[in-house]
Every structure is written in C-alpha cells, then in structure tokens.
Length: 68
Image (tube, rainbow, N blue to C red):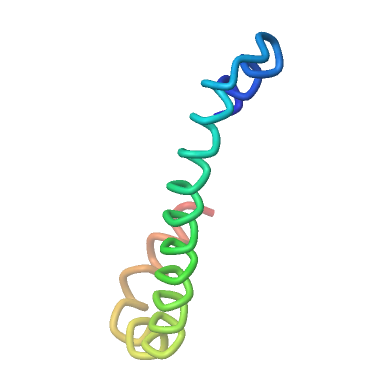
C-alpha cells in the first residue's frame, strides 16, 4: 500500500487512490479479526498456562537451561 500511495503522490492519478481505499478496507477487516482472535488466544493461554506448565515443565526447563 505504501508503494501505491507513493505512486499516487508522484503521479496524482485517481486510480491509485481508489486502489488504496479498496485495500484499506480489506486490511482493516483483517486487522480487526486478528486482534479479536489474538485476544481470545491470549485469554485461553492464561487460563490453561498452569496445567500446561505443570505437564511440560520437565521438558521445557531442560531445554531452557541448555540454551542459557
């Protein structure tokens, strides 16, 4: 979108501006869906983190210690 916007500023053609407006709506919807999904996933991980940590602790702690 930045390239198309730069082309609009450079040439002044309305076609580029229409393309920006079209794709701006699509990116806005995709961003909103990503934010909503990310909030749900974060909440689910927060609720399940204790059980996950208890079951995978012996495995992940060894790999973390190995990396440090």
